[in-house]
Length: 568
Image (tube, rainbow, N blue to C red; front, side, top):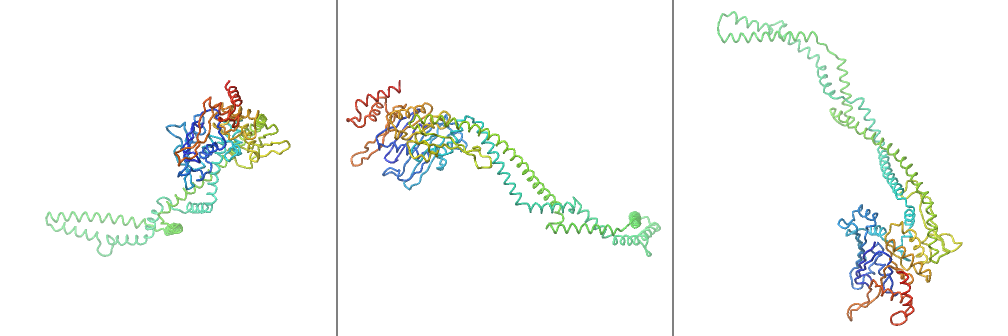
């Protein structure tokens, strides 16, 4: 609900603050008093276009703020919270502000946070709806028709289910599309990975294999030289034709034993020579065993050579060191496994895509059935109200058109549009093509009367809905506006006493000269009328400009009668 509008330096308004209350508030005043100025300023806080021409003479900027209470607007509060625009200390309030500078640029704020004009419009559409002959009118948007019909149906859980499934499908489809594109783009790379992995599966050395092969190769490759050295050592130690190590040591030991000299030093030498003789003899035994059992294996040497050549060739092909082939093998296997995981994920997402589409079709068809049934009921009820507003030949049809989209749509399987014919035999046309602004305003009023109990918009503004009507029709308009005010907040700019007399509150717009002589200027003022003042204003509207007070005794009596009937 709109609770306050603050206007500074807008048109002929220097400073104006207006407080609004629940119910129907009639806004009246003489032509040119500034009623349109107030609605224009309000429109700016809702995202209407602006230029520097709206700034008061001598001012550098126009500054307009609107304060709303959102206690009965959970949808708006949730939207503000999700977009991090909610006032944490006063979450039930929503403050919209618009500043237009003398350079023609404008800035916007929601709850003190700077926002784009589109965000300002989004918030405004949830809080207030203006019906007039001017640009800001939501009923000209097909999206509003769909919203009103869905609210009239009264199946919020089904609507939520359709929206949620569509969103889940969209997220799943985006993920599926991304992975599929990546899979297609990396197809050639994946084939190369598989080829390389298969090659390494067949030829890459196992853990520790390379080191073992190199050691075995060194052994096999030195077999001939090993045997020759062993034989030479054996001859040197014991089997040579000349003196050997064993014979030499034995001769030395004999000299020491046969010398007869008993010297501690020589005895120590004898012990050492005896020990050396024993070790050489043991070495001879080992050499003979090595020579007797030694077997060269040229075939195995060839096999080892071939395997080592294969490993080195594989390393050159993959541009790495032979000892790094094992790590490369493991890395390629991991990459292929990841690729395989992506393919499995694609299959899973494809199955989920099919499931979500089936779930969506089931829920969306149920919604379509409810919409089709409710469309006829809504149209008939609106037509009943239109007839009471002096448009007996006008008919409104709620038309459902199948959507051309093949993918799940959050709004369902169809679009909705209100079509109207104002004369017999005339083909139904969209609301925006109705020539008469007065007719459009009355039709909008009829729509709002029927949808008021289910609509989520708490504040409705009607600008001159009485254009071209009078008498009993004007009374009917006033009665319907008051009926709307019983369920929410209605602001009505009117020139008809019959309409204004139905208001719970009455606001009078007037002009007055402000400032001192030589610097005086015309300004706009707005005042809420007392019960006595309301009688005088209704009388003025009924009686024209007779007398100094602007009303006649007859119009005064008539005004008292009209207002007495409203409060009886």
